[in-house]
Image (cartoon, rainbow, N blue to C red; front, top):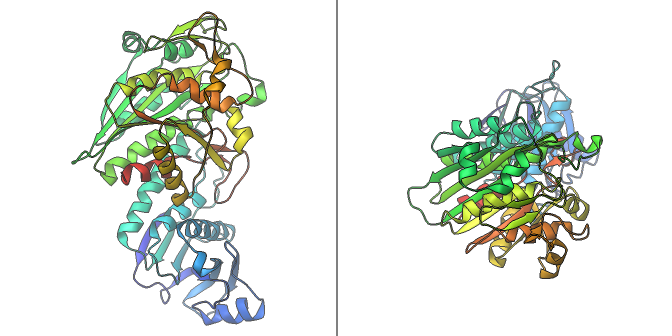
Length: 466
């Protein structure tokens, strides 16, 4: 879908003119006031739509009125949601092009583009019969700068969504390494198995040793012209999670291609950073592998040694993500960065606690946690801080090693966070659990079912505004 900006679209020829209505106000088009407002009592609640066939009374064939709610409560998130609703309606009527002419004072072009792109998205590469997509939309009254930044964010989300939706037979560790290497403007190093062994990443290597796919440790680096802060972003890169020898039930494996959603997020973010050019140094780190059962798989009861020398008793081979992240965290802390953020589809417990609406967040620096929560709220991603009480670590204690990789089924997200903290040294750190938000079983808001690109908007804004 091509997205354009124009000074004036209200009098231009188009298939559908999209206008807004605030509650308690009239619209900018008299034909809409006559039929939608006066005749049918269209109130303009947020996301409501009303379609009018103009019958030659306008330069547009149809007018679509979109409710924006109360003017005093309108913001960027509501703009994204309203445009998304409009795109869904335009898809229903098989429109090919539309012009948006909203009567608003703020330049919400970035949010409008993101909303349009989220709503128009479909992972349809394997479908012979494709769903309907818009060819072109044009926005009035928004700046080129906001529109262009919105496109960068939308493209980053598409990178993440496409990778997490892709089948595991395609989105292998080698494929993630290929995508990382193809991003221009980064210094990228792909570590192969022998190099990973030399770095003594025993936890990461153990997880991948049952698969025919070789593990890849990916390190991307962006350096701004003026480096004001150094940040490491770590994405969980389990390209398929069978559970290993502690095999998942068949139904639970159906969507396990999404277990690299954290890695997909980091790849999406890194693909956009080179275009945004923030004054920071950003490291994108992914320990990519598959967790598969075979004669070479790691086993319950094995004792692994992580990069920092700490030993881990394997209590359950299906708690594999934290093992790969452990070595990735050790690696990141050696880069002398100011902050480390890891993002992962880590625990089913987070899905139970927060559902598909919010991601869990925890860490060792309250100010950093609050800033990430506020950044997410500003761009429409919800985060909820989970406690890291030291008592939760008791269930991770092992009789034969420094710790086990799983603990009690109670407080599972917190015990996972405390496990990860054992591999963080001398740096501000936050852990984001997107187990519930990364992949939707059914449509939610502007999103269809499938991968959402969770975390991309928040991390991009966080890096950009630091």
